[in-house]
Image (cartoon, rainbow over all chains, first blue to last red; front, side, top):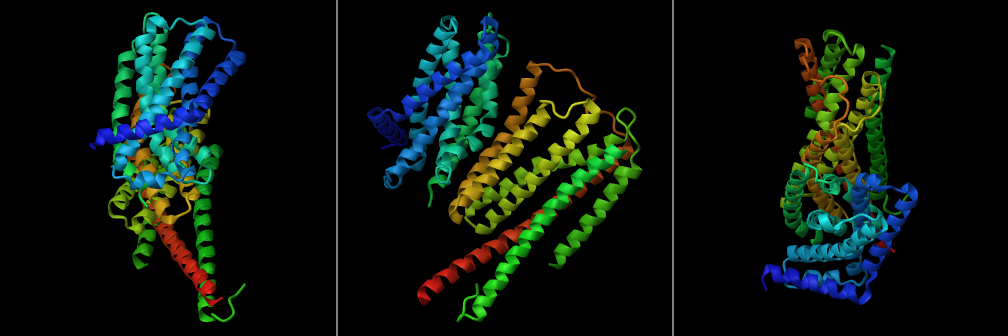
Length: 225
Length: 48
Length: 230
């Protein structure tokens, strides 16, 4: 098996286990919807305010919902004591990382799609003309989030309070990503699109490349015993 | 001028507080070491 | 031990020289007045807190490559002392900002990066505290340290670029705008003094860490012996 089919195998395993229980996706989804509900009552935004606060709201929701999923990613392996088996399997550990990361990415994208639809419907915001850009930004932002989040989740699962530790480690590191994602989303929320769009998209691509590389290089040390 | 004095006081206070905690921790660990030494010298009756 | 005393003396002398230069030798700045003298402390601490994370991370990387525990204690000590200077940088920055800009805090790229750096330092120290097995603690905190250090320039640049999009009122001139020659002397002396002081603190912190580890190993051995004796 080459590296990528190893990663694909891990990805497939995670998708299968998730679709048997649906724990992570359900909790992320409900959490996301609740945040949107809270936001509506906290600010009661009008059309202009949606343009202004919408990007921030969306990314805060994505990130906190994503964090719930990240915590599950390795906690499940630990509870069932299957991490040992995974490590003994004749595959490279970087492939475990890549598979897990892609699984997190897939779950998050699924949840984000639903949140986006609800956002458009609840706030009466027309996403269709911006859909292409929105998907691209969401993909780039979520990829960066998943690549940093997966390795930090693997680190924080070893601590005593792993669910608290993950945000403490993760949020400062992904701050540039949040800036990039929110700025580019804000750029497409206005008519016509703002000028910063191309710049921030490039920034997101660079962030992804840097952190994906570093995480792939370092992941072996995280699992080592 | 007073403000400047207060500002420097704050800065130096922070630094000295840190040095103090290091000294304190060092003292604690030295005590512990002494206790262990004691234990090793008189293994019959472990102190406490 | 001798060398360390010598180093402490050197640090002390340079520190005194820096204090003299800051408070007596350097002229008082015209627009900001005497308060400007905080600048020397502030920029030095900022400088150290950025330098420290890279200094610390070189030990983390070397630790991951060789697996020598001593390198890990050095990295840990460097992170902790760096955290102290980062706190100092933020506090002195706020003290300086209040009389000059009239506010304690502004989301300026430099301040924001310092703040995020501070959070990364805290994350590192908390992670170390919460991991129990020593080998695991060494490895995982090294990995997080490297991720954090890689992020530092990205955080700074992203903040700057973000700022150019959201213009804010200009507050005071840039801090390096037209320093007098005497001010430069004081500035470099302060920088040297702080760097030496950082290294000195790091050294004593290393010693502490190593003693602690020795004691912990001894304690474990004693426990095993006591169990055997029973």
